[in-house]
Image (cartoon, rainbow, N blue to C red):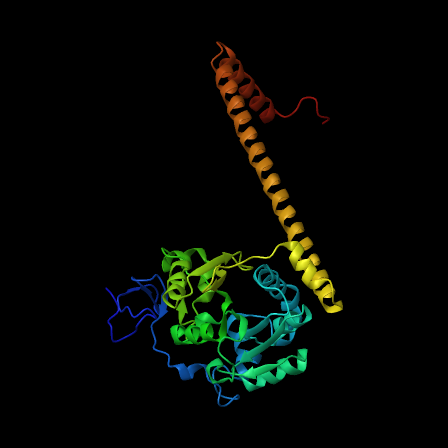
Length: 364
């Protein structure tokens, strides 16, 4: 049974939604998972930081209480050494400083700060005046109160717009992404991280296996959960036909990609080094990336070692099973030797008899 057209439209305009879970339907046309409750664009706005959904409580209470995430104060430190470096490394692959970068949904501002450390002309946008002020004070970076459509940004003036865990929250992703593309230079790019809905997923199976993607089914927050196919379709529809998927830091439920209206050009490690080494701040950023690369190499080596140990364990188990089969086969052969079974039964009966009489060798 499909969801009726009066209940919900997919971003692509399709009304033929397959029931997926109590709160989501799957679009037959593009492969997007759609939150079934219609959410107006005003849902994103924060007019009152004390009461609106994405206001102060969202950052100080909601994310911790609802999902068990670390608080915003802890994340100002943790994000810098984890996701921020992953994002910076990917961005440097496509664009070098001093490119002009805007991050939508910059949260506490740590990625903006890291970008500026690396030499980018970076600033951020958030919806909550409270979190904007928090980011400005915490990292000393320029952050504006959104939405981005209301900001005085000249069309064609930006090199990069980063949207990390933002696309899934947008009530009208077509309108917002159309506006963002207008703000970019002709060869500008969007860098996005967003949950990845893998077509063919089954909600019952996710529940039974406690699949990682379950935590992305966030009512009233994640309105559109894109598949790689539907994300590609969205941007191609908007004239940004060049898309390159990168490794996501949380690859078990996220996807991460760059998209542009022009062919994507990549930088070599030598070009990245040449861009960062001339300045003291750039050298610090490069050093952080070096540490991050070493950590990745260590993790990869540990995974390889674990895989090798597991393979050895499997080989040992297979050898043990094979030896057990040989022993059992030899036992069966011994049991078929004439007279052996009778001798065995006699010995057992004699031992039983002696046990009942008591051990004659034991002292009285």
